[in-house]
Image (cartoon, rainbow, N blue to C red):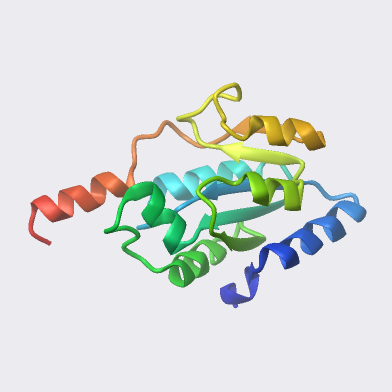
Length: 160
């Protein structure tokens, strides 16, 4: 069932356009979501509160390696996407190959682009693209006290 929420960027764009035509608002959250943890869940639940629907753009395995190094991700993109899609607050998930979400934002034009609390609206690198099409950048989630990278490092140090 959750796998049905995973779609191509083109299908996600059509999904969003249909929702906006019906008068619904759409938020887009983005990330790697490797080793899904409570910080991810809180971020996505908080992001969903900004709009009627929440679409999540998930970094592909290739873009994750480009950002985080050759040993990441731990969990393959198809499994990460299915786990994120299984969350009740998530309406749809797409996987993208770029190292940032500018191309995805231009294609989808969500009403809100949601980043975590490690950003401010002014520090979001893609804010220029969101402004181009008239969207809003918003911040969601709890303080960034959880990190997949830290969990992975802890496991490596422990020999797990």
